Image (tube, rainbow, N blue to C red; front, top):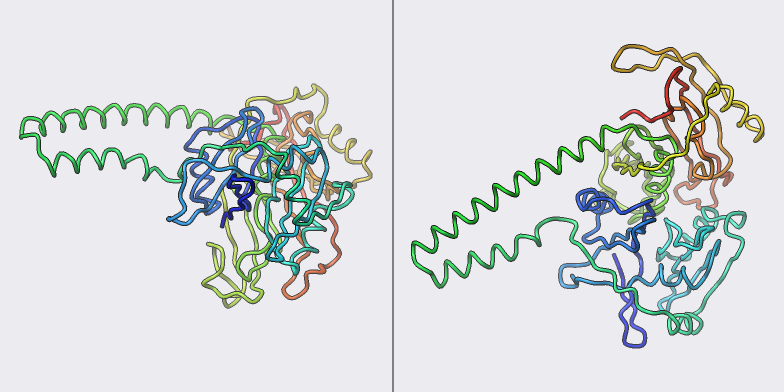
Length: 391
């Protein structure tokens, strides 16, 4: 739930979910993503790249604009900072920035001390060397230097868009304007609905063309990691133990740790009500891509991995396409760092099939089972392909 912090007559908001995208997606995509996050509203900052925030407000606190504090602090912090900010109630607010000085996805989280070690491992000192602990007085001083962001909010559903229509109908019913006026109004409504259906059909057709377009491997990896890193590690007495991406979905694996089934994330329940598997959609934005080389993609990929000290597992594979089966090779490997740091589009014929990651959290033991940061990846190299992810 998004929380408020008042300072110098400005109402700031904390504890939102953030995703960084190359450019601003359409409203329909953002509404679906907001609903997947369980948010009531979303807002965007900048256009290219676009930082999207997802907020959850109770009904009595709904608003049209918000001043998110985390992105404002990120601008003041600079690049590669991990900050633990101690709030008045003893809770800890996590804010971090990426190498470009932008808000790091997966942060802007308010947690308890029991969850702190898990966040420290997730945002390791190797990736975030500037580590800061900030108390209340220092936070007040920082906030005093920040201008409000005033981000416009949009509802996660279209319910609010019908309020003016409902108000107009109520006025007509209550006060009446005669049968003729009502008939004219109905005609206008019908015409508006007809035009809306045309616009919707055009929008769906355009969206369908976009959805059917091939996805460059780097865009697929970025969507997978951005969505996964924006998810909480803890949820009402449940722990996120692992995640994986495949196709157009992200799968989160949860284990019960003191919570009940009523508190579990929305997903498929297993192990006598002690495990939960949650599936979320991936959103893609892939207009720009690096140019793939003309050489053998298989040799280039294996050579690149070998140069990094990675030994891939290789097998012959057969990848299907609309024209039939295409012979290729299947590979799997353990990538030792964030896969977004590599430009996968430069590998001709590469189709990344899946990425998985263990969070090394176990019920009752947040110390983990090793704490490595490896990502299990699998892919195919198709002969004669341009290296795009199929839908």
